Amino acid sequence: MRKSNSLINNLDWPLLIGFLTLISFGLMTIYSVAFNEENPSVFSFSEKYGKQIMWIFLSLFLGVVVFLIDSDVYKKFALPIYLVTIGLLVLVLFMPPINGARAWIGVGSMGIQPAEFAKITTALLLAKYVSDINLKLLSSYNILIALVIIVIPMGLILLQPDAGTFVVFTAFFFVLYREGLTFDPFILKFINLLPKVNYKNTWIGSHFIPILFVLVFLSILTILLGHKNLGIIPGLPLYGSFGIIVSLFLVSVLGILFIQKFGTKREKVKIRLIIILSFIVGSASSYFVEYSFVHLADHQKDRIELFLGLKEDPNGKDYNRNRAMAAVGSGGFSGKGYKNASVSSVKTNHVPESETDFIFCPFAEEWGFLGGAVLLMIYLFIIIRILVIAERQRSTFNRIYAYSVGMFIFYHFAINIGMNIGFAPVIGIPLPFFSYGGSSMMSFSIMVFILLKLDSQRRHVLR
Image (cartoon, rainbow, N blue to C red; front, side):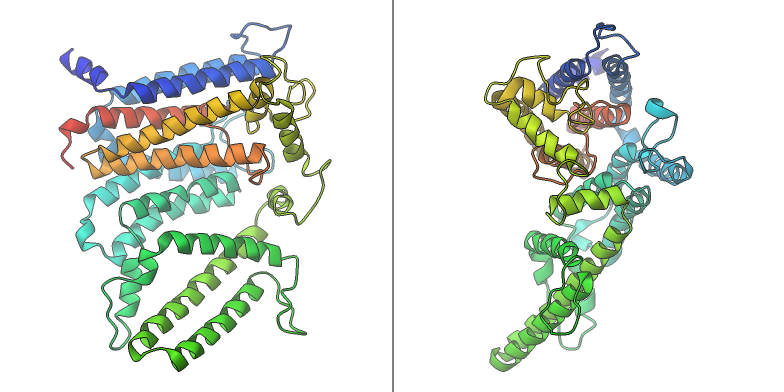
């Protein structure tokens, strides 16, 4: 009894209240947008709001179960449950496709999406592995193992294909960077193979964020060049990654010649090495982006090309995004009122999937700019609260897991809202705790309750 009271007293109530608030707002919005006069009861299980009630109760039940489990179990069994989800990700590839993707196990709306739960198990295993190594003696082998833990589920998810969840998994790279797991060991190992060169700190490792933005820019440019010749060399077609690689090569040669002519002897070796490594990384990432883009499903390619302005089809393939922006804008400053959404109503079907990926549309249409701003502040409060929880952990395991949860919610929140207002391509990302659907609701609920449990026992954990 004393232990139960201790858990309750140490529970992070602000996070729990924020979580329950979003679930309540989400259910209200689903009830409004999918309302059926013939079945007005919120417990009508033939309607989507009735099914969502069922998913919420099941998610809360599972949340309480994982909260009652001793926190040591999550670290001890991180590898077995990770392997189980990897097995499910393999199994799902042999299931019949639904909406062009093999992402579900089950029948219709009662299926589960293993990729949603893979986020949790990958976060747990990554937290366990990193917490077990000595960061002061970090090696390239440690970095490689951490990357393998992340890349295996990412590769299987890409095969489904599920581009949205694949993108969300890149959140782990920011978590690694926060813990100091940069690419320094790889670069140092490469540098030390060269004669008379031995640097303690590498340029690439200490400039991770700027390099990441450059790689994102190169990725977008690679897709843009897939439709247009770069044209810097007359008579030579430079499309896609080939155009990027040739451009990077020419810039690298000019850079090396410039530093050879005007640089000091000490600068020449270091900057020349940086240029060579930048060329290799940039070329490899550009080729990988092109290869991945080519192998995406046609509807996923269309969404990215429409977002980048390579295609225009407002009443066809870009209909969803076009109508979503119209619905959000129609809410005005204060909205049309609860259950008065017209553009994003399920009945009118002007915004397909308005109860799932585009759930923000009916909410913004009903409550306007003011309601949307309040919702955004609640999400920001939850994300900031999770970061506060992460920073107060004594255990590396707890901290890494907390940051993983925070980054997942941030990714989903930012991309989903971006999809609804035209700032991001439509890649099928649900709004956490808000969108209709069982897998998303269960996985995020379990994720949060595990975090609440780890945090409630943080004073008893030394590492």
